[in-house]
Image (cartoon, rainbow, N blue to C red; front, side):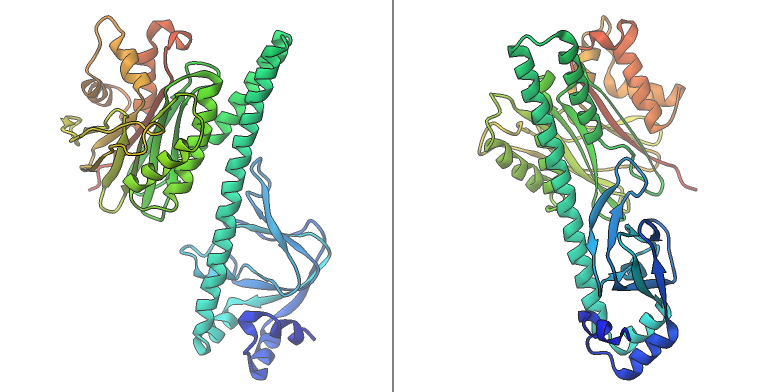
Length: 414
Protein backbone atom coordinates (compact mmCIF):
# COMPACT_ATOMS: atom_id res chain seq x y z
CA UNK A 1 0.00 0.00 0.00
CA UNK A 2 1.32 3.44 -0.89
CA UNK A 3 0.04 5.10 2.31
CA UNK A 4 3.39 4.58 4.07
CA UNK A 5 5.15 6.46 1.28
CA UNK A 6 2.56 9.26 1.31
CA UNK A 7 2.92 9.79 5.06
CA UNK A 8 6.69 10.24 4.66
CA UNK A 9 6.11 13.18 2.32
CA UNK A 10 6.37 16.33 4.51
CA UNK A 11 3.46 18.00 2.70
CA UNK A 12 1.06 15.14 3.46
CA UNK A 13 2.28 13.91 6.85
CA UNK A 14 -0.87 15.20 8.60
CA UNK A 15 -3.41 13.59 6.26
CA UNK A 16 -6.22 11.67 7.95
CA UNK A 17 -7.07 8.09 7.10
CA UNK A 18 -10.21 9.32 5.35
CA UNK A 19 -8.13 11.66 3.19
CA UNK A 20 -5.78 8.81 2.31
CA UNK A 21 -8.80 6.73 1.36
CA UNK A 22 -10.06 9.57 -0.86
CA UNK A 23 -6.61 9.76 -2.46
CA UNK A 24 -6.73 6.04 -3.23
CA UNK A 25 -10.23 6.37 -4.68
CA UNK A 26 -9.36 9.36 -6.90
CA UNK A 27 -5.95 8.13 -8.14
CA UNK A 28 -4.44 5.18 -9.88
CA UNK A 29 -0.99 3.66 -10.19
CA UNK A 30 0.88 3.73 -13.48
CA UNK A 31 4.21 2.41 -14.77
CA UNK A 32 6.70 4.27 -16.97
CA UNK A 33 9.73 2.74 -18.63
CA UNK A 34 13.15 4.46 -18.90
CA UNK A 35 13.05 7.31 -21.41
CA UNK A 36 9.28 7.79 -21.33
CA UNK A 37 8.15 11.40 -20.76
CA UNK A 38 5.64 11.94 -17.94
CA UNK A 39 5.20 15.74 -18.18
CA UNK A 40 6.27 18.24 -20.82
CA UNK A 41 7.50 21.79 -20.30
CA UNK A 42 4.98 24.38 -21.52
CA UNK A 43 2.05 21.92 -21.43
CA UNK A 44 -0.71 21.69 -18.84
CA UNK A 45 -2.38 18.70 -17.18
CA UNK A 46 -5.24 18.20 -14.74
CA UNK A 47 -3.16 15.89 -12.55
CA UNK A 48 0.20 15.50 -10.85
CA UNK A 49 2.31 12.48 -9.87
CA UNK A 50 3.66 11.02 -6.66
CA UNK A 51 6.73 8.85 -7.29
CA UNK A 52 6.24 5.50 -5.51
CA UNK A 53 9.31 3.69 -6.81
CA UNK A 54 12.20 4.33 -9.20
CA UNK A 55 14.02 7.48 -10.31
CA UNK A 56 12.97 10.26 -12.67
CA UNK A 57 14.93 13.18 -14.15
CA UNK A 58 13.73 16.80 -14.35
CA UNK A 59 14.81 18.47 -17.61
CA UNK A 60 14.75 22.01 -19.07
CA UNK A 61 14.43 22.58 -22.83
CA UNK A 62 13.83 18.89 -23.56
CA UNK A 63 14.81 17.86 -27.08
CA UNK A 64 16.68 21.11 -27.89
CA UNK A 65 20.37 22.04 -28.07
CA UNK A 66 19.94 23.79 -24.70
CA UNK A 67 18.62 20.65 -22.94
CA UNK A 68 19.97 20.23 -19.42
CA UNK A 69 19.09 18.10 -16.43
CA UNK A 70 18.02 19.97 -13.30
CA UNK A 71 18.18 16.91 -11.06
CA UNK A 72 17.10 13.36 -10.25
CA UNK A 73 14.00 12.77 -8.08
CA UNK A 74 13.46 9.62 -6.04
CA UNK A 75 10.69 7.85 -4.11
CA UNK A 76 8.23 10.19 -2.40
CA UNK A 77 8.80 13.10 -4.81
CA UNK A 78 5.91 15.22 -6.13
CA UNK A 79 5.97 15.94 -9.86
CA UNK A 80 3.97 18.61 -11.65
CA UNK A 81 2.02 19.89 -8.65
CA UNK A 82 3.45 23.44 -8.83
CA UNK A 83 1.85 24.03 -12.25
CA UNK A 84 -1.45 24.34 -10.38
CA UNK A 85 -0.20 27.69 -9.04
CA UNK A 86 1.37 29.14 -12.21
CA UNK A 87 -0.46 31.85 -14.14
CA UNK A 88 -1.12 29.75 -17.24
CA UNK A 89 -1.11 26.36 -15.52
CA UNK A 90 1.79 25.00 -17.59
CA UNK A 91 4.82 23.04 -16.44
CA UNK A 92 8.16 24.87 -16.12
CA UNK A 93 10.19 21.74 -16.88
CA UNK A 94 9.80 18.28 -18.38
CA UNK A 95 9.88 15.01 -16.41
CA UNK A 96 11.27 11.79 -17.90
CA UNK A 97 11.63 8.30 -16.42
CA UNK A 98 15.28 7.57 -15.62
CA UNK A 99 14.61 4.02 -14.45
CA UNK A 100 11.50 1.90 -14.51
CA UNK A 101 9.10 3.86 -12.32
CA UNK A 102 5.86 3.30 -10.47
CA UNK A 103 3.83 6.45 -9.89
CA UNK A 104 0.51 7.52 -8.47
CA UNK A 105 -1.44 9.78 -10.80
CA UNK A 106 -3.46 12.20 -8.65
CA UNK A 107 -6.10 14.61 -10.04
CA UNK A 108 -5.81 18.25 -9.07
CA UNK A 109 -9.42 18.06 -7.86
CA UNK A 110 -8.20 15.95 -4.92
CA UNK A 111 -5.39 18.42 -4.18
CA UNK A 112 -7.85 21.34 -4.30
CA UNK A 113 -10.10 19.59 -1.81
CA UNK A 114 -7.19 18.89 0.57
CA UNK A 115 -5.95 22.50 0.31
CA UNK A 116 -9.42 23.75 1.22
CA UNK A 117 -9.23 21.73 4.45
CA UNK A 118 -5.51 22.37 5.07
CA UNK A 119 -4.72 25.89 3.75
CA UNK A 120 -1.31 25.72 5.43
CA UNK A 121 -0.33 23.21 2.72
CA UNK A 122 -0.35 26.09 0.22
CA UNK A 123 2.44 27.77 2.15
CA UNK A 124 4.42 24.54 2.18
CA UNK A 125 3.94 24.22 -1.58
CA UNK A 126 5.15 27.78 -2.12
CA UNK A 127 8.21 27.08 0.00
CA UNK A 128 8.88 24.03 -2.15
CA UNK A 129 8.43 26.15 -5.28
CA UNK A 130 10.83 28.83 -4.00
CA UNK A 131 13.40 26.16 -3.20
CA UNK A 132 13.14 24.82 -6.75
CA UNK A 133 13.46 28.35 -8.16
CA UNK A 134 16.61 28.94 -6.12
CA UNK A 135 18.01 25.66 -7.41
CA UNK A 136 17.15 26.60 -11.01
CA UNK A 137 18.72 30.07 -10.69
CA UNK A 138 21.88 28.56 -9.20
CA UNK A 139 22.08 26.19 -12.17
CA UNK A 140 21.72 29.16 -14.55
CA UNK A 141 24.55 31.00 -12.82
CA UNK A 142 26.66 27.84 -12.95
CA UNK A 143 25.97 27.53 -16.68
CA UNK A 144 27.08 31.13 -17.23
CA UNK A 145 30.26 30.54 -15.25
CA UNK A 146 30.97 27.44 -17.31
CA UNK A 147 30.57 29.41 -20.53
CA UNK A 148 32.92 32.05 -19.13
CA UNK A 149 35.36 29.28 -18.22
CA UNK A 150 35.16 27.94 -21.77
CA UNK A 151 35.81 31.39 -23.20
CA UNK A 152 38.75 31.88 -20.83
CA UNK A 153 40.14 28.53 -21.88
CA UNK A 154 39.74 29.45 -25.54
CA UNK A 155 41.67 32.67 -24.86
CA UNK A 156 44.45 30.81 -23.06
CA UNK A 157 44.63 28.23 -25.84
CA UNK A 158 44.95 31.05 -28.35
CA UNK A 159 47.87 32.59 -26.42
CA UNK A 160 49.64 29.22 -26.38
CA UNK A 161 48.99 28.83 -30.10
CA UNK A 162 50.48 32.24 -30.83
CA UNK A 163 53.53 31.64 -28.62
CA UNK A 164 54.23 28.26 -30.18
CA UNK A 165 53.70 29.53 -33.75
CA UNK A 166 51.01 26.93 -34.39
CA UNK A 167 49.83 26.84 -37.95
CA UNK A 168 47.30 29.43 -39.10
CA UNK A 169 44.51 26.89 -39.50
CA UNK A 170 44.64 25.98 -35.79
CA UNK A 171 44.61 29.67 -34.83
CA UNK A 172 41.55 30.34 -36.98
CA UNK A 173 39.75 27.34 -35.48
CA UNK A 174 40.28 28.68 -31.95
CA UNK A 175 38.91 32.06 -33.01
CA UNK A 176 35.82 30.45 -34.50
CA UNK A 177 35.25 28.56 -31.24
CA UNK A 178 35.49 31.77 -29.20
CA UNK A 179 33.10 33.51 -31.56
CA UNK A 180 30.61 30.65 -31.28
CA UNK A 181 30.77 30.72 -27.47
CA UNK A 182 30.24 34.49 -27.49
CA UNK A 183 27.22 34.18 -29.78
CA UNK A 184 25.80 31.47 -27.51
CA UNK A 185 26.01 33.82 -24.52
CA UNK A 186 23.84 36.48 -26.18
CA UNK A 187 20.01 36.19 -26.13
CA UNK A 188 18.55 33.91 -28.78
CA UNK A 189 15.04 35.39 -28.55
CA UNK A 190 13.50 38.81 -27.89
CA UNK A 191 11.10 39.52 -25.01
CA UNK A 192 7.36 39.17 -25.61
CA UNK A 193 5.34 41.85 -23.82
CA UNK A 194 1.88 43.15 -24.77
CA UNK A 195 1.82 46.15 -27.15
CA UNK A 196 5.63 46.25 -27.40
CA UNK A 197 7.85 45.48 -30.37
CA UNK A 198 11.52 44.64 -29.69
CA UNK A 199 14.53 44.60 -31.97
CA UNK A 200 18.24 43.95 -31.39
CA UNK A 201 21.38 43.64 -33.49
CA UNK A 202 25.07 43.22 -32.65
CA UNK A 203 27.85 43.12 -35.27
CA UNK A 204 31.40 42.71 -33.89
CA UNK A 205 34.19 44.67 -35.58
CA UNK A 206 36.38 41.55 -35.34
CA UNK A 207 35.57 37.85 -35.15
CA UNK A 208 34.99 38.32 -31.43
CA UNK A 209 34.11 41.63 -29.80
CA UNK A 210 33.66 43.57 -26.59
CA UNK A 211 30.00 44.59 -26.96
CA UNK A 212 27.07 42.69 -25.54
CA UNK A 213 23.36 43.11 -24.91
CA UNK A 214 20.93 41.14 -22.79
CA UNK A 215 17.31 40.93 -21.64
CA UNK A 216 16.67 39.82 -18.05
CA UNK A 217 13.06 38.81 -17.44
CA UNK A 218 12.22 40.09 -13.94
CA UNK A 219 8.48 39.31 -13.84
CA UNK A 220 5.41 39.35 -16.09
CA UNK A 221 5.58 43.12 -16.74
CA UNK A 222 9.23 44.07 -16.19
CA UNK A 223 12.32 43.25 -18.18
CA UNK A 224 15.89 44.39 -17.58
CA UNK A 225 17.71 45.67 -20.68
CA UNK A 226 21.48 46.15 -20.82
CA UNK A 227 24.13 47.11 -23.37
CA UNK A 228 27.82 46.95 -22.48
CA UNK A 229 30.93 48.08 -24.35
CA UNK A 230 34.45 47.04 -23.32
CA UNK A 231 37.09 49.64 -24.21
CA UNK A 232 38.96 47.25 -26.52
CA UNK A 233 38.34 44.64 -29.18
CA UNK A 234 39.43 41.08 -29.85
CA UNK A 235 39.93 38.25 -27.36
CA UNK A 236 40.80 40.31 -24.22
CA UNK A 237 37.67 42.39 -24.72
CA UNK A 238 35.60 39.26 -25.33
CA UNK A 239 36.79 37.75 -22.05
CA UNK A 240 35.99 40.89 -20.06
CA UNK A 241 32.67 41.13 -21.92
CA UNK A 242 31.73 37.60 -20.77
CA UNK A 243 32.65 38.37 -17.16
CA UNK A 244 30.68 41.62 -17.22
CA UNK A 245 27.69 39.90 -18.85
CA UNK A 246 27.46 37.29 -16.10
CA UNK A 247 27.93 39.94 -13.38
CA UNK A 248 25.13 42.14 -14.74
CA UNK A 249 22.72 39.20 -15.09
CA UNK A 250 23.47 37.96 -11.57
CA UNK A 251 23.10 41.39 -9.95
CA UNK A 252 20.00 42.31 -11.97
CA UNK A 253 18.20 39.31 -10.48
CA UNK A 254 19.17 40.49 -6.99
CA UNK A 255 18.47 44.24 -7.26
CA UNK A 256 15.38 46.17 -8.31
CA UNK A 257 17.40 49.38 -8.65
CA UNK A 258 19.55 49.85 -11.80
CA UNK A 259 21.96 52.12 -9.91
CA UNK A 260 22.61 49.47 -7.26
CA UNK A 261 23.02 46.83 -9.97
CA UNK A 262 25.80 48.76 -11.71
CA UNK A 263 27.49 49.60 -8.40
CA UNK A 264 27.65 45.88 -7.62
CA UNK A 265 29.02 45.13 -11.10
CA UNK A 266 31.72 47.77 -10.55
CA UNK A 267 32.79 45.99 -7.36
CA UNK A 268 33.06 42.68 -9.23
CA UNK A 269 35.25 44.20 -11.94
CA UNK A 270 37.51 45.99 -9.46
CA UNK A 271 38.40 42.61 -7.98
CA UNK A 272 39.64 41.44 -11.39
CA UNK A 273 42.87 42.52 -13.07
CA UNK A 274 41.35 44.03 -16.22
CA UNK A 275 44.71 45.17 -17.67
CA UNK A 276 43.65 48.85 -17.73
CA UNK A 277 40.44 48.04 -19.59
CA UNK A 278 37.07 49.41 -18.52
CA UNK A 279 33.43 48.96 -19.50
CA UNK A 280 30.67 51.43 -20.34
CA UNK A 281 27.19 50.21 -19.47
CA UNK A 282 23.58 51.23 -19.65
CA UNK A 283 21.15 49.07 -17.68
CA UNK A 284 17.48 49.83 -17.17
CA UNK A 285 14.23 48.23 -16.16
CA UNK A 286 11.37 48.50 -18.63
CA UNK A 287 7.95 48.44 -16.97
CA UNK A 288 5.43 47.54 -19.65
CA UNK A 289 2.54 48.45 -17.35
CA UNK A 290 3.59 52.05 -16.67
CA UNK A 291 5.60 52.29 -19.92
CA UNK A 292 8.64 53.68 -18.13
CA UNK A 293 12.33 52.92 -18.53
CA UNK A 294 14.25 53.44 -15.29
CA UNK A 295 17.96 53.21 -16.09
CA UNK A 296 21.49 53.88 -14.88
CA UNK A 297 24.22 54.94 -17.30
CA UNK A 298 27.94 54.38 -16.74
CA UNK A 299 29.91 56.28 -19.39
CA UNK A 300 27.61 55.00 -22.14
CA UNK A 301 25.80 57.04 -24.85
CA UNK A 302 22.44 58.29 -23.62
CA UNK A 303 19.25 56.74 -25.08
CA UNK A 304 17.24 58.16 -27.95
CA UNK A 305 13.50 58.67 -27.42
CA UNK A 306 10.95 59.45 -30.17
CA UNK A 307 7.26 60.25 -29.77
CA UNK A 308 4.37 58.65 -31.65
CA UNK A 309 5.02 60.93 -34.65
CA UNK A 310 8.71 59.95 -34.66
CA UNK A 311 9.79 63.35 -33.35
CA UNK A 312 12.89 63.29 -31.07
CA UNK A 313 12.14 63.99 -27.42
CA UNK A 314 14.63 65.50 -24.94
CA UNK A 315 16.46 62.96 -22.78
CA UNK A 316 17.85 64.33 -19.49
CA UNK A 317 21.36 63.28 -18.53
CA UNK A 318 24.13 63.82 -16.01
CA UNK A 319 27.70 62.63 -15.64
CA UNK A 320 28.10 58.87 -15.76
CA UNK A 321 31.51 57.20 -15.38
CA UNK A 322 32.54 53.79 -16.73
CA UNK A 323 32.75 50.76 -14.43
CA UNK A 324 35.90 48.86 -13.51
CA UNK A 325 38.09 51.92 -12.80
CA UNK A 326 37.20 53.70 -9.55
CA UNK A 327 35.89 52.52 -6.20
CA UNK A 328 33.81 55.68 -5.88
CA UNK A 329 32.29 56.70 -9.19
CA UNK A 330 29.33 58.64 -10.57
CA UNK A 331 26.30 57.16 -12.33
CA UNK A 332 23.60 58.90 -14.35
CA UNK A 333 20.23 57.62 -13.10
CA UNK A 334 17.15 58.68 -15.08
CA UNK A 335 13.58 57.57 -15.81
CA UNK A 336 11.96 57.97 -19.23
CA UNK A 337 8.25 57.73 -20.04
CA UNK A 338 7.65 56.05 -23.40
CA UNK A 339 4.67 57.62 -25.20
CA UNK A 340 2.09 55.59 -27.10
CA UNK A 341 3.53 54.76 -30.50
CA UNK A 342 6.93 55.97 -29.29
CA UNK A 343 10.37 54.48 -29.81
CA UNK A 344 13.25 53.99 -27.36
CA UNK A 345 16.73 53.11 -28.63
CA UNK A 346 19.90 52.30 -26.70
CA UNK A 347 23.14 51.63 -28.53
CA UNK A 348 26.93 51.44 -28.32
CA UNK A 349 29.27 54.12 -29.66
CA UNK A 350 30.12 51.81 -32.56
CA UNK A 351 26.99 53.23 -34.23
CA UNK A 352 27.47 56.93 -33.42
CA UNK A 353 31.24 57.02 -34.11
CA UNK A 354 30.86 55.18 -37.42
CA UNK A 355 28.23 57.69 -38.55
CA UNK A 356 30.45 60.59 -37.43
CA UNK A 357 33.26 59.29 -39.68
CA UNK A 358 31.07 59.64 -42.77
CA UNK A 359 31.54 62.58 -45.11
CA UNK A 360 28.17 64.10 -44.21
CA UNK A 361 27.36 62.59 -40.80
CA UNK A 362 23.61 62.45 -40.12
CA UNK A 363 21.98 63.47 -36.83
CA UNK A 364 21.24 60.11 -35.20
CA UNK A 365 17.78 60.91 -33.71
CA UNK A 366 16.69 62.46 -37.00
CA UNK A 367 18.07 59.45 -38.90
CA UNK A 368 15.97 57.11 -36.73
CA UNK A 369 12.90 59.28 -37.32
CA UNK A 370 13.50 59.29 -41.07
CA UNK A 371 13.85 55.49 -41.23
CA UNK A 372 10.66 54.95 -39.25
CA UNK A 373 8.70 57.36 -41.46
CA UNK A 374 9.89 56.15 -44.84
CA UNK A 375 11.01 52.55 -44.55
CA UNK A 376 10.28 49.69 -42.16
CA UNK A 377 8.43 50.93 -39.06
CA UNK A 378 9.38 47.92 -36.91
CA UNK A 379 11.93 47.75 -34.11
CA UNK A 380 14.02 45.08 -35.86
CA UNK A 381 13.70 46.92 -39.16
CA UNK A 382 15.13 50.07 -37.56
CA UNK A 383 18.11 48.10 -36.22
CA UNK A 384 18.87 46.62 -39.63
CA UNK A 385 18.47 49.91 -41.51
CA UNK A 386 20.83 51.64 -39.04
CA UNK A 387 23.40 48.92 -39.69
CA UNK A 388 23.08 49.38 -43.47
CA UNK A 389 23.55 53.12 -43.05
CA UNK A 390 26.57 52.70 -40.77
CA UNK A 391 28.25 50.03 -42.90
CA UNK A 392 27.53 51.87 -46.14
CA UNK A 393 29.26 50.69 -49.27
CA UNK A 394 32.43 49.82 -47.32
CA UNK A 395 30.79 46.75 -45.81
CA UNK A 396 31.26 45.07 -42.47
CA UNK A 397 35.04 44.55 -42.80
CA UNK A 398 35.89 48.27 -42.44
CA UNK A 399 33.75 48.97 -39.36
CA UNK A 400 36.12 50.25 -36.65
CA UNK A 401 34.10 49.32 -33.56
CA UNK A 402 31.48 46.80 -32.49
CA UNK A 403 27.96 47.77 -33.54
CA UNK A 404 25.14 47.13 -31.04
CA UNK A 405 21.59 48.47 -31.06
CA UNK A 406 18.49 47.58 -29.01
CA UNK A 407 15.14 49.15 -29.96
CA UNK A 408 11.69 48.90 -28.44
CA UNK A 409 8.57 50.44 -29.91
CA UNK A 410 5.25 51.07 -28.19
CA UNK A 411 2.51 49.93 -30.52
CA UNK A 412 -0.47 52.24 -30.98
CA UNK A 413 -3.66 50.81 -29.41
CA UNK A 414 -7.20 51.85 -30.26
